[in-house]
Each structure stands twice: as structure tokens, then as C-alpha cells.
Amino acid sequence: MKIKEVRATVHRLPIYLPGFAEPTEHRHHVFCEVETDEGHVGYGMTARFLTRAVANVLTNDIRPAVRDMDPRDFEAVHDRIGRVVSERGLMTGVNLAAVSCLDIALWDLMGKAAGRTVAQLLGGHRDFATVYLTYGFGNYDREQLAALALEQIAAGHRRLKMLVGVPGLGWREDAARVRHVRDAIGESVELALDANENYSASDALQLCRAVEDCGIAWLEDPVHNNDVRHLRHLRRHTAIPLAAGQMDGQAARFRQYLENDAIDILLPNPMFNGGITETRRVACLAQVYEKPLSDAGGATYFSLHHVAAFRNGTHVECHFKSRFMEENLFIAAPTPHDGTLRVPDAPGFGLTINRDMLKDSEVTD
Image (cartoon, rainbow, N blue to C red; front, side, top):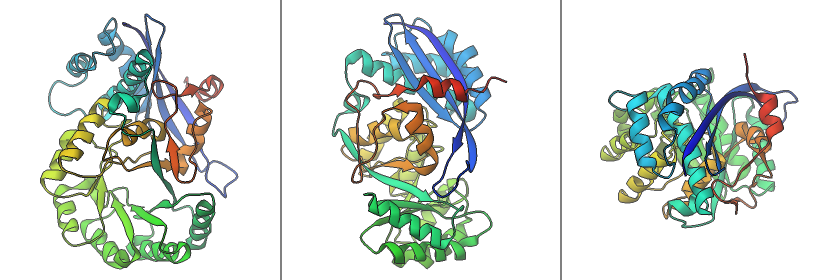
């Protein structure tokens, strides 16, 4: 089996949130198709940042480098493209996003060629993952957050995540919003928080002290740039578990976190960290350090496979801001039921592309 074509396109997709008739924003994604001489087609995706540049790298630099290579030789593929997109050191930015997009497509191909799901190729621990729902955004006030949380609980969700570090609010208002939601949902529902790296070290500590009695499942990306020193200090001064890794989740970065005892939960996202190949390295590192493996960042149907595959896998994120895109770009994609998302039976990632939506959303200018 040999790679014969790599196609990359940019797509602009609306973000719909409950309670809003119009999209609250639009986001850009890069969609990649890798086709082999045997007729298999693998799909990959990356998101949001400098997407035209990412598509250009895939088309003009990576495509000629990998043509006629066997996609199952993913170590050889990574060695070759590593020499093309990064002269030395860790890849970042556009380079890393392009590699992530391609690598996801390679694992889709490998699964299709083998007749197995990516979760099975990675280890096959389970064919499902429990779900946490990222629902609580700055678009909502306290009452709306509480009401929406109760709606999701009624729909079967038992794990919710809301944003803190919302620009313009400050940690005191964040704490008040968290307490309001906790009072509304009771103690039996898990509630996690995500600061998106928006707090200073001191504000993150203040927030933790203010909500520590609220039974917070974890606080994600609490400090600017996920500074390892500040994460380590925060972890020593709060009982709230800390999580990180969706945007700079390479194995080398997680090694720094773990060697400094700075986080409790690993959250790699294959759309940003180098793909499934790199996420597999992170998963093995998590096992060595006996840490739970989850995900974050809106890659539900790709991350589902690594969370299900490994014994230390816990929850997969379902994100309100990705839900419309994912449920419409993929035909008959699985949906959560009673807090669980099942791995599709079809090989690879088990996804069928909605070609009409792909065409309608493509950015051509």
C-alpha cells in the first residue's frame, strides 16, 4: 500500500450555542484526505489557527515528501516529514498542525487496511469512553449557566465542564459562577473547570481557594502558558487536581510536567500535538507515571479512540462549540448516551464524511 495523493482544504464552520439563534462565532478547520494506490482514503483534521498556511504546508511540502511511502510505516513517514518541516528541536505552530492533520489520516488508513478501529490498533482496552460535556461559556450569565447545566443533566450527562478565566470577569466573578452552578446541580454531578491559560499564578491560586470546597473534578490549563513552575506551585497549594496539554501536548512537554510533579491529568489532543502517533507516546508516558489519560480541545471523534484504547483512559470531551461541526461534518456519527460515547464499528475512525457540508464550508479565496 502506497500513498498516492494528499489533499488539504480549509473550511469555515459556524459555532452554535444553545439559546442563541445565530452563530456566536465561526471557526476554521483544515481537512486532509490521504489516498493510497489500493483505493483507501484516510481523513485527518486540525483546527483554528493559520489554517491557510497549514493547508499549504500539507499540499506543497508534505505531499511530495510522503508520496509512494507506505502509510503503515508511520515511523519512517515521521522521520521524513520531520526533516522537511523542522530542522531541529520540537515542532510548533503551523508545522506541528500540518503533521497532526496528516498523522490522523494515516491512522485512519491503517485501521481501514487492517479492518480494525484505531482504538483497537492502539490497544483495544474498551470500545467506549465516558463523556464530559464542556458547556459553560462566558456567553451565559449565572442563571443561564445553572439552567443549562440542569438541562444537560436531564439529558443524561453526569460530568460537566465550565470556563473560568473569562476575559473581563475576574476570578471573583468566576468563583461566584462556579458556586452558583454547584448549588444548582448538587454534589453528585462532576464539575470541572477550564481557564484556557488565562490566569496569572496568583489569580489561579485565589480561584482555587475560593472554590476548593465545591468538589471540583479538575482545573484545566490554569496559568499563562502552562508555566511548569507556576503549575507546580499551584498544585502544592490546592487540593483541586490540575490538568493540561491540549494545545502543547507533545510527549516532551508532558515529561516536563510529570518530572516536576506539576499536573494530575494528561489531556493530549491529536489535532494539535502531532497526531495519534504522538498521543500514543503521551499515553504510554501517562501509564508509566500512573496518571489518568483524557482529552480536551474539541477533537471528540479522534480522541475517543485513544481514551478508549488505554487502560488509564478516562473521559472524552464533548464540546458544545464543536458539536455542530462534528455532528454535521460526519454522517451518522455516534452521540453520547447516558454519559457514554461508543467507538464506531467501522474500521479506522469509523467516520463517513458529509461531502455536501465539506463543499459548502470550503474557503476558496
